[in-house]
Length: 218
Image 1 (cartoon, rainbow, N blue to C red):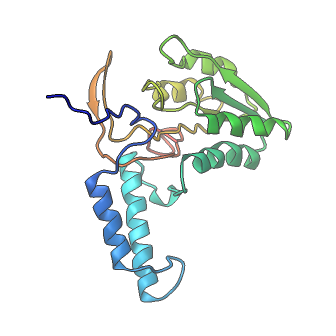
Image 2: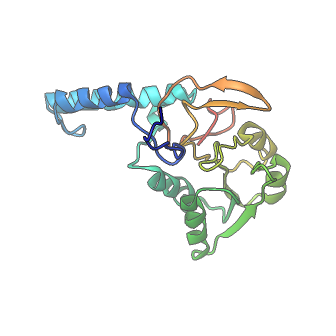
């Protein structure tokens, strides 16, 4: 029997909502509509739910600092906050990005050139993998931020984020690694098969060096 239903192959761009996520959203919506910044009972309930979600997000990335988790309306906003926001708040004037970053990251970096920032783009190999050595060769003491996506949104390449962090540790830039397609994705490749601990989607998560903060990606 022929199945005429369309075969959807663009889950890397957007996918269906998991039933447990839908149930959690429905439960919050039905419980009330308190403003988490207010002081009354419903507001405190909303605040508690928000902080619980922050703790869950921190747990996913292995962070013990849930108060550092910032929720945004979506990936583009998060990318701009991470790239332009961090660079503009720094006294360093250089930004390094990989050639396969999401358009939101590349355009955020390009916008900084109007403010006098230098933007360096690091190339990739035929599998879209960013070489840690290439990143290390591109940074300097004036590098404010290095952006390398953790999981490619088009072909699924997993970048060697841990190795990149180690390669530029002496320069000490902030490394945002957009991770909108990482958690919850089962990966099979040359390095074996792994299963992320949770099915939630993270847009961005902050990373510093292991001795400063536990975590594996922003």
